[in-house]
Image 1 (spheres, chains in turn red, cyan):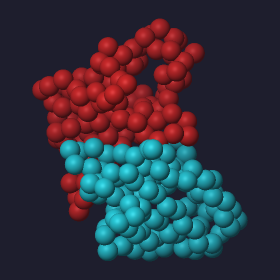
Image 2: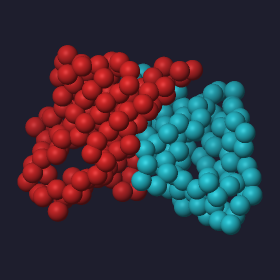
Image 3: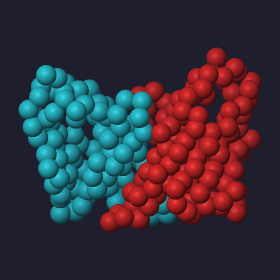
Amino acid sequence: SAVISQKPSRDICQRGTSLTIQCQVDSQVTMMFWYRQQPGQSLTLIATANQGSEATYESGFVIDKFPISRPNLTFSTLTVSNMSPEDSSIYLCSVEVETANTEAFFGQGTRLTVV
Amino acid sequence: RKEVEQDPGPFNVPEGATVAFNCTYSNSASQSFFWYRQDCRKEPKLLMSVYSSGNEDGRFTAQLNRASQYISLLIRDSKLSDSATYLCVVTTGGFKTIFGAGTRLFVKA
């Protein structure tokens, strides 16, 4: 299993500012994933963060808006830049661990409100 | 067409009822299948994996139909604590994990 500590758990931010979300995992993992979950919607993958290389972004997400750091195998940050109210959402980090299948573990989520 | 589709519900059932959720997926090359549970304002957590032969864990039974590309979750003897959103999750090759939008369940006393 994996235990992920994500912070902050929530924030209210002014439009135009940036917020950095941190995730710390209790074990070394190759890939960390960042998701966004808007109210009543499914989880949407923003990017995959690999240690030692640039993150891989999904369609509709760009590095300038969502810069990611992955300085080591247990830590990653996601920054939401130049925020607008449309960025209000829950942001989740995740890792996948090989068990009988591949199980995804999530951080507790960051509930972001942009005003 | 969405890659993973679920009936969003909500399903409102009394305690003790049996309730079933279905989920369809579009990619026939999908490899692994799961049901996750997400409580209100919480992160998703694995409920159970879904195997080709079907599997049961207490009151929960999951089944996979590859030919029709759907998976199901059956909950027997519903409890109040079963109230949550149930996410259908499918993984394809290349570490791609796709989440359904979830089915909301409310179990009432």
